Length: 202
Image (tube, rainbow, N blue to C red; front, side, top):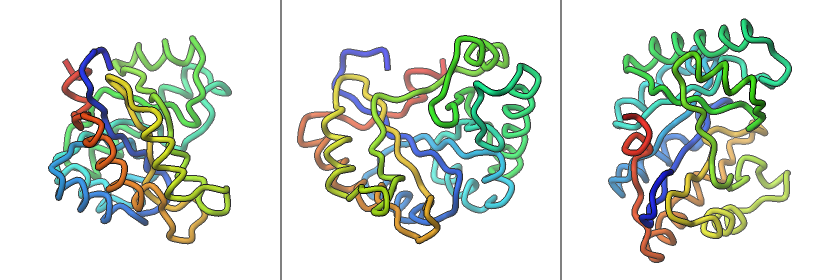
């Protein structure tokens, strides 16, 4: 984020299931901390209550494509369809106005794909670091490692990427477990949790 202030924004991608979401929303509510969620359109269609809960809690909703493909492999028409179909699904599920923020699946970008997304009126939102909590225990991750990756990334204007849902389908969501410790560590180091909309929605 364009600032020299010691602030950090929390973001969560959502493409799998609802595991961990209630825990994350409860912790954010308890801390009065804002976050931005990036659901896919397919997630919004299949889990509308989850996307509605994100919006009703006051958090911003970005766009993470409809079906989570590699945008490098798509042409302009396909990219447009992915973004617009996701936008419609997120609107329907949430009953809210999605943000003009787009996060590329797999963080895979090209100059052409960014230009296509910008032409549709979206800012491409990447991140300072991913906790890698989504890899789960099977991928060699632990809560401690997720926390260390987050805390090690703190710098003015940092954007942290986390995930809700379980990629392995086992219900284990390390980012949900790590979130209280991440927030505690950020506050202890003098960082404030800020809303991404504060900096980029204007």
